[in-house]
Image (cartoon, rainbow, N blue to C red):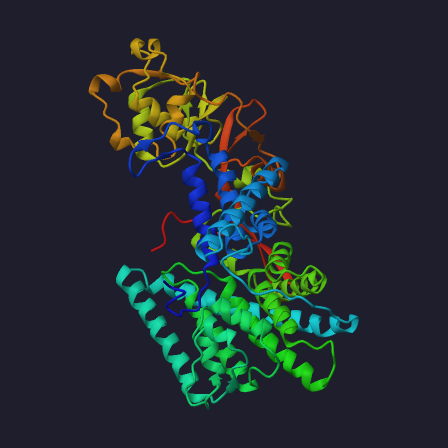
Length: 581
């Protein structure tokens, strides 16, 4: 509905999101909303399995949107996944292939030719049959890459400032609805003012185009249509296709210039609204507009040359603009190649995207990274931040540590779960005295690690030492925890009597007896690599006697961030707040 409403948004973002949501839901074999368990896929009810399915779902979404299964796999690898291994590659690729095949089959049936698998994706940019380039054209391609990087950095800066204002002032639901109405009204007003104000007519060349779309005549003569209306009164991906494939002299200089300026600002304003919106298509459309302008300039400088093709420069401009905004290289090259069906143009696209990324990174980060940081999501980068080798675990860790004994009273477990929000608790031999805790000496000898979710399941099913019948019924196994996944019980859902609170729980059969741990002198890059490669949530810090001295979580590592600006860089430590007022 957002796309049909004429907003400067694309449909590929929600498609990727939907793919990830479906993967996360279907892989669990149950629906917690309708409280029904299908009794299948119980093996996958774990965090790391769900994480891998989400990666595959994002790739399937890209494959469905663009008809680019290989590009989907590379997108998931480059942007979507926080963990990757060799086995995951073919699984994700198989999911993306199935997604593209299913969409192709459904679209062929919808278009009345079931079984004719020629409908690759939801977005169709048309095929470039004869797309060649001369070696000296790399010079304008490089300049277009620089232009894409500059415009992408400007786009990110404007959107960053707008998002700051939104987070600060537009917080209530009615305010978000009002802003969406304002943006929609402004977009429609700009479109109509352009159509009324710019007189750009072109001939309708063939009758076939009439059946495909509806030409708008406006003030043009019979047999002509308004080129401005042709851009605005169709979905953004069809406008991209028009800029790629329409013949030379289809658009005037003024039309493309004004459209680019208006659409660029509208796209900056629209991304981040309280609506489902994609980033790819509006950015491609902006880039295709100024790329087409570059093509017209080349035609002016080199008239009558056979190698000149305005659509070719529109494609390069679209890639440069999108690369300058999101800073993706490999996956974006493959997605564009699969979209336009021409592999020979891969090298120019790769070079343009690399230059756009380098130029954009000189000024700020990619838009995805900016929004992730503004939302406070602790997603880890591929590598540890440079300049962090002299930061050690003793500086990063959290203290004091809440620990549990191997055999613990129910009342103390309940009190701890009520008083803190931690998700992992080290299991130790003995609780330290108040003086030891006050001096941060140690918190007991490490015996294991138990999760909050495990404790709530044990309390809910009353797996106490005093309840022999629970143990004798043989219900206490891994399935007990998988059935409760992913929405584990809250403490309010656990009914405990005064008698239950006096009972004890033996945590040794349930805790992880060999949790990952490091010593106090471990440097930050080594801890970072442990979290990144193993997908950890908690890391216990111990001393030489294997006594617990602290805990490290993802947030403790992510708060160390490298800032880059105008060729300079440095390391900064962000402050973590529980809530932002």
